[in-house]
Image (cartoon, rainbow, N blue to C red; front, side, top):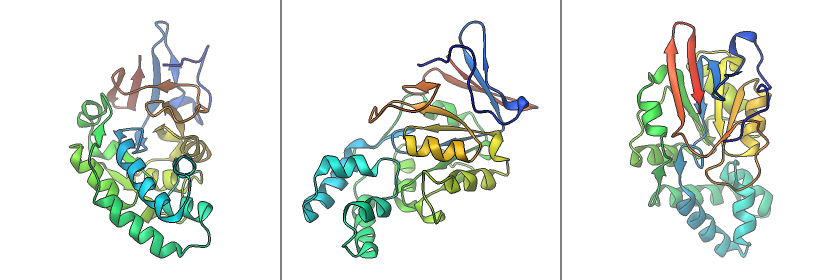
Length: 237
């Protein structure tokens, strides 16, 4: 876990300023928690790579280039970047159809199920670049409880790094954006959350790139949440 030297930057209000305690445990005060999906709360690397391998092979595109471009983006946005000459609607339709049929090897990241199972659904949600069928399938095979908000690629007009997905998540939970804490594994998602005015924690489980984030965790084994009258206290360490 990466710790800041004195305090964590980026809070919008005094009430939700994160606090570094004397024993080096970091606490965030918030009203709701928003999680990214792939690479943050589920390990879906194997099936994601298989899907991009199928698509890349069909169109003669380098697999590593496709996987790198896809991180934190909706499939349609990645396809548009890599192959703008293709019929986007047809490509996305086929891509999603294949992705929904391949959920092998998807598992929850360590500690996260224990974390969310102790929370009421009203205080947590998921904001993902996956389409709704794929997202629900991954949550189902990993035995996640139903979140209070699920924002997918189908629910927004602009994906990450635009703040729209996270703003939609806060709206669905009925909280102000600055009262949300976000867990993300992609710089595009971290940027989106910051622009929405939210606090952020980076999840380095996937280790695809260096994260632009002061506080980082490899998984959720050392994360706990206390619920009180003033909201949530998320403790890391």
